[in-house]
Image (cartoon, rainbow, N blue to C red; front, side):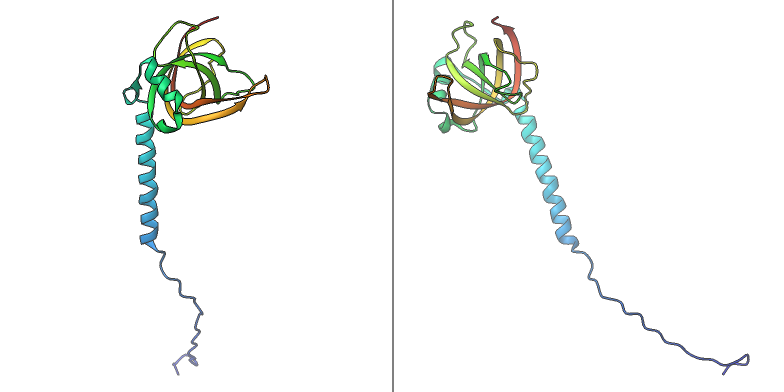
Length: 168
């Protein structure tokens, strides 16, 4: 007892649940993995927007690629062409272009090619534009024609597009 009154000792125990520390090793590994993936994507973007990454080809060599595009998936080329379809049916992410490995006469682009937008934009591309395309081959695509048949064409993804004229 204390001089000023009674003393009581109260012992209250709080019930706490043990929570282990967060797995900082897993979190750090995930963070490193995400950073590595971002770096890989940035390097790939730099490669695909660098014109020096693309191979120039002759008309004959581009014909060989177009003959078997599935065997050339992932290969990068510079091709030239005349836009034959860029409308509501193809949208803003795909156009149809008659292409060649070289800049030839306006009506001498012979290879029907499906071109999708990779890093490039087709917003300012219209039918009859003459274009230089830096593309990656993605394979082939078969589509139905308005005449009731079907056509198989090489399919490429454009990462750079430059309009250098108009055939109209």
